[in-house]
Length: 362
Image 1: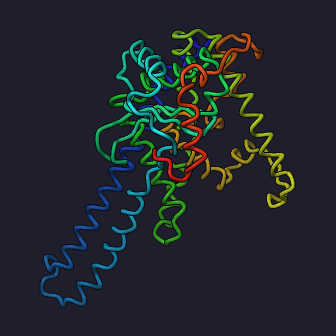
Image 2: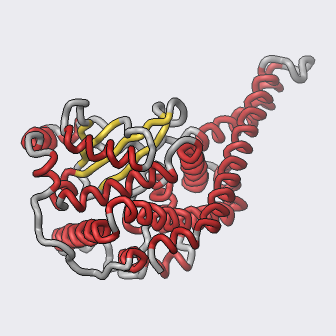
Image 3: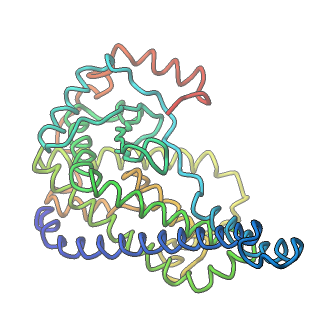
């Protein structure tokens, strides 16, 4: 089965998941907001003397303590901190014009607006971020995040494929109403995570009946993430060719393995992990709470960054099989995309990363 058939065959399944998840998120947020308004109004009515006007102030104050406490707890759930944008260097409008033209051409092909900002990060990754300007509200903005290590690892043809995949996400899943749907799903996921992680008694009580629903929401969202990846692959394959996309997937996967091996070697003398070698999939099947919580956090980011990590993507072999391309190198080495598009900026970017990494503005 190729990626087009994979995408077409799962379209109805994806649409059903999309409706189900959006409904659950909106209901969860709606009920939470309704409870916040009700408890706040009740506390204010008691404190202001609108209820039990003939009672003493001390009694009204004592009675208002419970709804006021509930209101504060619910507000903490609802307004949990939004994950920040990746740290990096935002390109000025006149920088990397050839790269911007490539992005603009891909956006034009998919008939989507040009991305609002381009951010160069220190990750071996690329992502398309869509989020309200002020975190929870405001005009929806799109940010293309491209890692400098990624630019140095792939050639221009491979970079075009990666960009096509990211902009395919924008065109199919992260624009207009769909961008807001993703935003509300991520918001509800943050609320769920905040409820389960809060130590107060109210959160612990609410977490018990919510747990089964929230776990199902996580698994469904993970399934939707997989289906969206196959759809973006199909669109990118139509735009730049299946072989170019496969090259990019293989190249990034190889570089990631090299990076992982280097980190493992660096940590090989550290025994603090206790030698735990349990299989992650087995842990998830058993419902391991710590791993489920980590998955919720990654999925929450995934609703904003469609490339949060390999665990939220179909296996490389499945993606290559859908593209009908084998696991092998397809073209000869070529100059890197960084050399092609960012040659003049490379010393400046590297200097800024080296000089003040903690002050990089998203």
